[in-house]
Amino acid sequence: MRLFSIVAVASVLLPQSLPAQNEARLVWQPVQEYFIHVRPDRKPMPVEGKKRLNSFTAYTHLGTDFGFMGPAEHDIEWQRDEICVHLGQEPEAWSGMWHSLAGLARAAGEPLNFMAAWPAIIEPRYQPRISSLRLDAHGRGRLKLEIKSETQETLWSAQVFLDEESTGVEVLAVPPMACARAKLLTWVAEPGSELCIEALFLGVEAPEVPFDEYVLAASYAKLARCYDADAGLVKDRAHLENGAFDSLASTGLFVLATAAVSAPPLGLVSPARAASILRQVHKTVGGLERPYGLLPHFVRRAASGHRIHPGTEYSTVDTAIYFHSLLLGSEMLEDHELKSELLSEVDQIDFTRLRLPGGEVSHGLKEDGRSLLPHGWKDWGGETALVMMLQNMVNENAPRRLMERPGQAWQGTGFITEIQSLFYPDFDSDKPDALDGVRWLDVRRRMINAQKEYISRTWPGSMAARMGLYGLSAGESLHGDAYHVGGADLPGQTMIHPHFILMAGSLANPAETYALLKRMEKAGFFMPWGMVETIDVKGRSYLPMVGSLNAGFETLGAYHLLARHRGFANRIHASSLQSPEMRRAVQLFYPSRRSADEPGSH
Image (cartoon, rainbow, N blue to C red; front, side, top):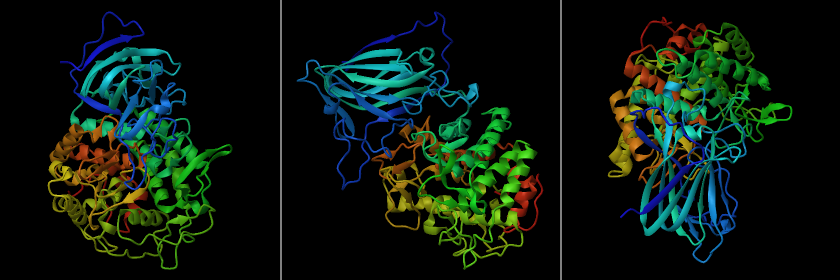
């Protein structure tokens, strides 16, 4: 017996002749799975619809906001991993929820086009479309679902009748052409209903491109969803208000990723659009205050322009990531005028005043723009290497300080051995570097093996071990309320940050990496809206946050992986090899200059 009977109507008339359905595979993208992220020692929130939500964790899987509505919204129960309404004794009252489908609900001009569901800067041939809606619910009663425009026009609606107590799953067809400017998805439980909803999903028809290209496109779409085109900056998280909390490191990674995916043989973004984004970002960032030449870690919009976000710092590593990214982007896009301006800004970084008594470069400056942060870059790894190479770009005769524990990443944290290789192909070599004598390729391979072995050894039989998941790196905690830095040298690690799979993807057998990503897609960890932020090693839960920094790592990792898999010219690495400034920077580790056509040594 069917659990549901369906009545669905579109509020607009569709053409008599519709384009033929493509043969693309269907992938389910959660709008929201109604699980609760809360630490065991804390009370679940919200218990009722009227309770205030934590803005740090209250977001949909789309990176948007949601809320409650109706005369009986205060009776909505959310104490378990499902939303329940109890209206059996309410013959007239109704309650429900709204979910923004793109951007914040109050943000005008940010609809979701069901015909082309990824950000509009992505070219049409890569665009997926949305053709169905899936509901996971149980109980008895009647639900009304609607898709609305920004002007509250009903674009599509359906009624779902629940007639049994057992869990049911139902798929409803949605006309994509009718929902070209969708803004809200709502459900309403009608009077007398006693039911629970576990999840809502969008049925996404993936673009008809090979899976390896799809991985890059989905990762880039995740990153692009954080881009504020009006400001020319990238938000730290997609669900934040524009201008509230923007990341300079993520902004740089976005520019570099955009330049890379615009280049042949891809064309994911047009070269003209990539060039425009490069210019816009440089204009915005050029207007920021830069004490000692440093950029802020985070900024926010103020009446007089963008300023450092209160409580944050001016960061040497974020400055290094930003300038490495934009220098490579300008090289790839052949914007020589802008590159000259960037080099002038790099030359203004006063590393002499940023040096601590031990000789290492400080992590940066406090919010006041004058006080040095007491900790410096001396731990071995890619972050320290990027800061030191930026210093070498400014002054080849700057004092050189050896790193501590050469070849050993702090805590065995995954991304530390990979971040430098997003920009430089030189670290793909087993030649000992000139600074510490480290064979970087060997260390990187040992790291990925240690990451894999940790899961199988520490958590045998776990979901992660069975699936082959790994990624003891850094990112948001499983509960979404703190930044967590894990690693293969620490005991009892239970949080996987899967961005490391793509960051280190080109080190492994590409076919094996793509096979793992396909398993992750089937398990709901790699979605059309991108890879999830954090996964519980036992598979009990995950964090669906759309965060821009790890999205940047994922996108660039996916690009390098695809270039290796297909054997086409890696434009990022080619630009790094032909840039005199990048060559001067990397002399610190590899003094012999390499020609632009010399391949890496994987």
